[in-house]
Image (cartoon, rainbow, N blue to C red; front, side, top):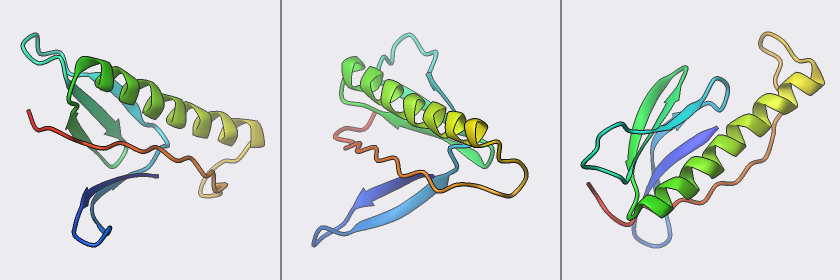
Length: 100
């Protein structure tokens, strides 16, 4: 599960959106003027993130894509179908430092 949160006071976070890793696609946003956008598409919706640089965006792209691929591979290897799922602990730490 991908959790999109915003930092609050006292080291707490507000949950803004959750997206399942199943069926997740991560891509750069094809806008020439903006090299820092990243789009995450899932079966339950999508979200566009803005990194502070194209390098940071590429790191996010790689890490989130790897997490989604690892999840899919785990599900395939275990041969799970339908509603049965295995809990896979994958931690992705993204700190959004700027807005586009």
